[in-house]
Image 1: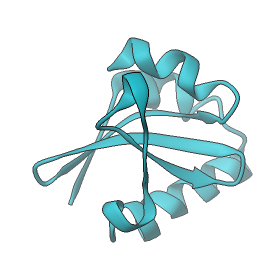
Image 2: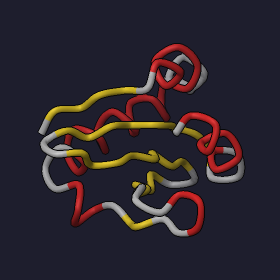
Image 3: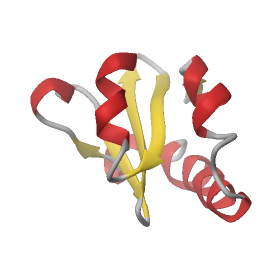
Image 4: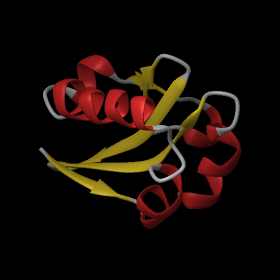
Length: 89
């Protein structure tokens, strides 16, 4: 599957991560999300219905599967990520 990042993920989310968290996130995307996004991701509910989350410790990767593409909408700490993900949809 192909990965497509929301522009703010590349410009704000990833640069704001510490290097060790960035490596963990990158490994999770490569080893879990690209391998089997349905198996490793959990469905979200409410206003985020149709989206999924991948947990990486206290960090979340919010994404949606569209055809053969994984669209990553947000990457952030679990306490903050859901606040701004609705704006990016």
